[in-house]
Length: 176
Image (cartoon, rainbow, N blue to C red; front, side):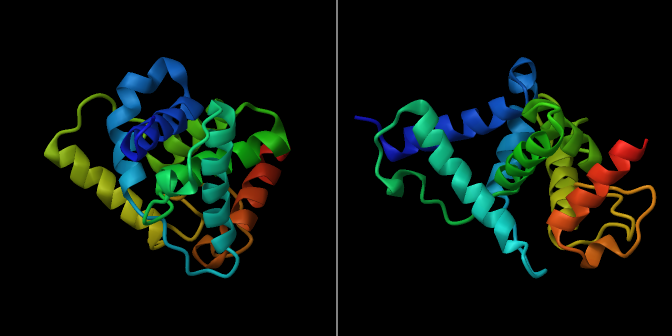
């Protein structure tokens, strides 16, 4: 019998594997911190990104063939890591670039790619600052510091739902 705690650990490992299996040990600490951080929505329709995160839990259970009651993955919140992986899956669906490649690009956009291996207390504070800036939309109007920085924004990305940010970013990628 698998305990709830073991399933949660397996789930975290599965999420990290979505970003890339050759970097798992290097990025495990930063991803763990991302998974501990609640993703909060306050722009209309960004609650859909939370649902995408919840859907990942079902995908995990199905993929792993686990017959576990839903309480095993009932977490208090949807995490930033879940939203990032869910967005990477949507980008891959739209652009066929691979979930791991898309997820790594999102990590780079946030500036989280440089945090590898064991995190110092200073690193943890810096990562927390990056995550807070993302969640509370304290990034630049062009999206710099968010999941989707744009070269030619048509509006303030801080006031735009994440889906439209992603679509604008994808459109820019096809124009380059």
